[in-house]
Length: 100
Image 1 (tube, rainbow, N blue to C red):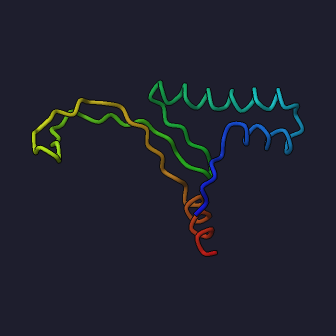
Image 2 (tube, one colour; image 1 turned 135 degrees about the vertical axis):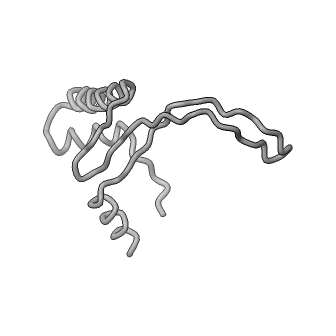
């Protein structure tokens, strides 16, 4: 398993090489796309990227949790959580990468 992380700068560099925009324009494009995705998620919309996956926001209701150390019951407040479901194509692609 690799310990590398794909960063915004890596995405910007890829856009620069593949599309031919300037580095500045590539950075603005990456930032714009990420901003549109995050804005949609903040509004509670689902973001579906074909052949990649679906990002969605789920509302989790209040529930009672337990402190594992003391056994004390503690309320867990309602919250919104981000979830991601990879597409079948992405799952297959990742699984194929494991067969090295």
